[in-house]
Amino acid sequence: MKNANFRVSPQSLPFLILLWLALPLAAHEPADEAPRLQPALAAGLVSQGIAVIDVRSAEEIVENGRVSDARNIPYTETEALADFLGPPPGRPAVLYCRSGRRAGVAIEALEAQGYDSLINAGGQQALESALNARNESNSTLEGS
Image (cartoon, rainbow, N blue to C red; front, side):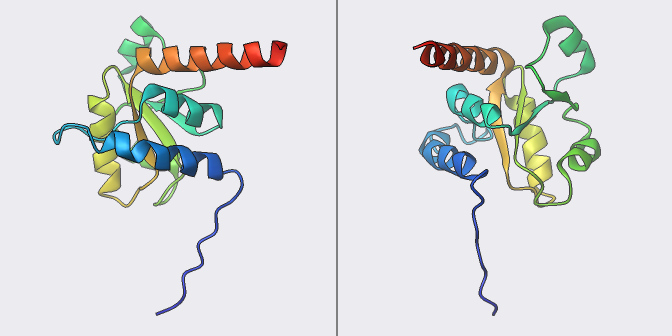
């Protein structure tokens, strides 16, 4: 067996730290739901430049908007999601929908194909609120 070298790039360190901190939170999710990060932790990942995917339909986005810089790929389009993420294990990404259920369905389908760095951020409103709070907090700190 070869020795596996595991290296962490400085760019991925914030992602790994936030993911490690969130694991105990994900352990408390009901068994029938995909683990989710609290919106504040997911917002931290998004602010670090992790890709954001809105898995709702185009019609829902027209009606309700979307998170800034989010890419819309409906959860039923697993092949398009895989194309966006690249070959397994793919790049890290935060997925969201209205409640987190469809993001969980998409993540389960992608994990079955070998993807392993996908985060369910839950619903759009909670994620947007967390992103806004983070931006306001950063603005306050910069103004001090």
